[in-house]
Length: 41
Length: 456
Image (tube, rainbow over all chains, first blue to last red; front, side, top):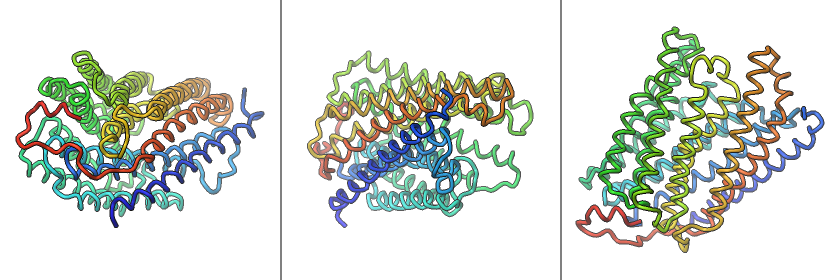
């Protein structure tokens, strides 16, 4: 496979990783909200 | 890019950045577990997310080191790589090993030896990759006949890293013996030979970015290597304080690990001196940010925060608490993540099509958000850790009761972690939005002189 052709697949992988990062941030903030009353503030 | 084979670095950097992003996913999942009952408890428990988080760190940083080396060596030796095919084989094997290890951890397939959890078959693949790497680099330098001090320190760091991986291949029934040898790999990597790799990248970047005299810059490298050897080797003993080894390791560890920041201070002075001497006139200002940022953040995270809890009388209370996480995050980010990102930022304009030399505004946002986020994370760990030490270790409160009292710091950790993750996401986006290029933009001249070290 030509190296140039690999750019598209790795770019797609990078977007998947960016989406996973966003999902983990949203999950973290959801959990913060859900547990807010339990958090000793 | 002066040599076509340098383009192999693009794929190493691409894989490294993808793994960096994944590392943050598991870091955020791990941090969230401190807030309360976790719906992912039986799918992704803390031990699994943490193992993946730390292993991905080691793998992506090493991938970045390999890519940066494949970029640096042709430039320094003024020749094409011995074999680009071997470099690609190495990358495929290495990435396959990393992905298989992560999948394995999800199914609880690991050794349980902290930071060296990779099962033996994975470790053997790592050995093969190290051997291919050393052979390829060695043959490139041999072919060219030009071997600079920067390369010498880099190769010494890489070969030593490979040699020091051997204790990790052995299995010990006794836990104390296992810990004793585990640090031969982990400590001597991160507080010993990886510092040489960092020093070599730093020298390479400073010579090119500041245009400072190569001879002067490389003399400093000897000083740094000397300090690393002096303090780093016996400094291993600061991991031996409370693990069942004889007491004489306490003063040895205390004294020599307290000397470890000397090499780091040396590096910061070195970078500052280069910039003072030559100014900051290089067009790639973004790479300058990462290079200087790396030395300053290393001084803060590895030097200052390491020194803060390396003495046995302090470490007695802080060992294995969030204070360790405070130091670990800032030190690893400053010393190894930032220098890798500096090398990527330096090489990017040549490796991709249409990227401005001075960097993009997204690139600068990525830099400052990462820096601010990591600083905030470090402070969050520090405040949580101080509370934890007083409540748990001094007042004698139970682990979970103490945890409840310090939970608010984990909210701060998640906020700062999100800022950091945004910076990393922008870096990843900025890297992949430009297509790679595989042609040389500046053909190497025959019999070029030392002054060509100044060209980018």
